[in-house]
Amino acid sequence: MGAVKALGHLEVWFLVGSQQLYGPETLRQVDADGREVAGALDAALPVTVVTKPALTSAESIRRVLLDANADDRCVGVVAWMHTFSPARAWIGGLEALQKPLLHLHTQFGRELPWADIDMDFMNLHQSAHGDREFGYVLTRLRHRRKTVVGHWRDPRVVARIEGWARAACGWREMQGLRVARLGDNMRDVAVTEGDKVEAQIALGFATNGYGVGDLAARVDAVADAEVDGLLAEVEEQYDVAPELRAGGDRRGLLVDALRIEAGLRTFLADTGATAFTDTFEDLHDLAQLPGIAAQRLMADGYGFAGEGDWKTAALVRVFKTMAAGLEGGTSFMEDYTYDLPEGNETVLGAHMLEICPSIAGGRVSCEAHPLSIGGKADPVRLVFTAAPGPAVVLSLVDLGDRLRFVANEVDVIEPPHALPKLPVARALWRPRPDLATAAEAWLTAGGSHHTVYTAALGLETVTDFAEIAGVELLPIGTDTQMRDFANEVRWNQAYHQLARGL
Image (cartoon, rainbow, N blue to C red; front, side, top):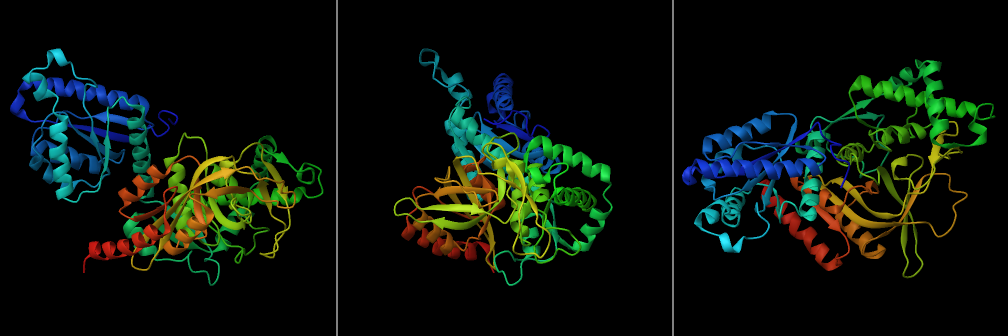
């Protein structure tokens, strides 16, 4: 479980379905049971769970779902049919609902009181009956939703609801998200391009371009006292190389790097952007490529991606929001190079500079080293190795006629050897099921070399987010077989063309 109420300013509404047929006493019990289930979920989830009165009519159902649409704190609704609830009463409300939906198929009591069961008990505890009615109409309406089955006190059930709730929070964050694109993308690169209008229509976030000179002006205006404050933070949080410490012969590089950070913070606040990109090919009057600045901003929750990759920058921000309160970290990442000893193939992920220290294992060092591209001073960066454990890497690609997510489950490991001459942050992982299958599937799907790397969220939450977004997801994991995967790509192509219509 993540930290309770890490997203407590956001709400999930808990809706219980019933009908007037059973009389007021039964409805009072339905309300009481609903409050108890919602209270237990509220105590366990990182969001606030709000209980609504039992819904027994088309009018009340439609009204509460319209209210959910209009309430900016509400990220989604959980629906449970405690008794039988005639599903035609839900049609109008479900057709109006624009927020994510989770269908919880549970039952108030975990075990049947065999000796006491009578028809009053049967009428009250009809979830096995009522939820099938509800599921039918959801399917008939082709309404996207997540279905979770099991008792509401089961930790596995709660964990699945939490994953969905986090995905719903990510979807809310993406609506109205602003990405600031400083300069264009790396010249002649294909996969970092895309249709920004289509992305805004499908996913809700806006990407706007700015001249690097706009940032440089903010950097020039940063007061020395602000830089001094950042220097104190850096010296406390990281192992700073001797030459970058006070009195060191390269101290000026760290001062310049943190002046860029301060300018970036002002620039992002002024533009309302919570994600940004830059490119080493367009640095204008900046003294160096932002390295530690991008890393520290990501650690504070901003989205970032290099070379103008606005799609990945947006996803980094969204997945950081989804992972609030969880251990493991989330970062911009790139598949950089391979280690290919037979039977033990791995990927070494890194970037020129900009990997988020939230994924680090152990202490982080602050260093400055030459960068053979960009034509500027040696940039300061944070150097570390990612903590071992399971993770997911996720790519968003523009196929021209639609968007696609590609995700790979990976197992991060400690490097078998030291890397004394690689002065950047890095992660070493074994892709599931193996490198050859995972890479072939990734290439077949058209996945990018840039990804969101998250050790905080699992594939099920990624799947929940894709379902909420209505965007195709091609997962690669332990059970992936290349022939089946290639067929899925073909079948999905046909499905999505038909689903779009003429």
